[in-house]
Image 1 (cartoon, one colour):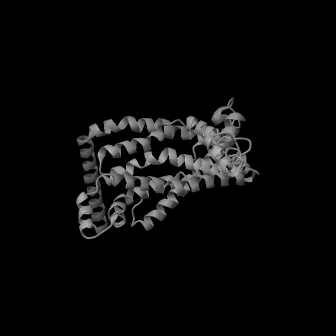
Image 2 (tube, one colour):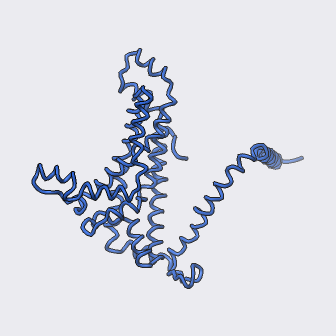
Image 3 (cartoon, helix red, strand yellow):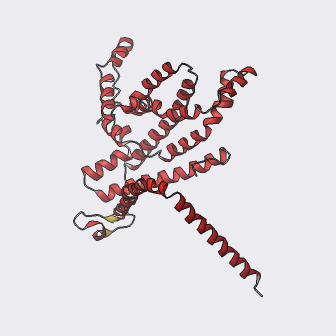
Length: 320
């Protein structure tokens, strides 16, 4: 007679076979969907995962002549060099402050825009306003920074107004204390309209009868937004916030570098610009790779931590 353990093992094997059979049947039935998905997977593998092999130079004394495998292994030497460098505190805090304040001030703006757009009933007016809000997203970063230098220059239109009030111009692009707010506010102006698209699309699925019923029950506009619109977009808000918080250390290099001057460097030098200067301008590829890898590890830790917190606060709904 077979023991209970053997019976359990045999039943488990049968369940696994049935599961594998169902999986093969699903693949055969939906093979065309996997064919459509294949190009995206291949491109992701080639351009996202294969280059990760190069991160090994962060642990080596890399020499282009010797190559990655031939270069000497130095372990955590470059990480220790960065963490003990006199610039570490300034660069790390600049990156953290710029990202943190940017997230705090820019995250609610697309939601507010979407809620406002959702109240516009005339389709033609709504489309024109959306076009006006989305347009800055298509302006090049180089052009945006050029506009900032023109408008905020000592002889620019904004300083003409400041001179009329105070009698002196403000050196917006030279003073470190102005850099962070100029960066964040220009980012909001450029990207808030485009970022609101996902919320506008979600609000379009709200049944108008819910608003009509709430109005008949005496609910005002703010009450309808709080009890109907916000619960609808709350899952999307959670996902967008998690992704934004997970990339809190990944500030765009181009804009920060283009806005840098010798005068505002104490506030504008961030990890991305530091990696560019050390890696490409100075040719210290291994050290710059270590700095970039350190930045990526911080982002992963933040992503996991924020996702855990949001799931606790959002009834188990998170990124994964």
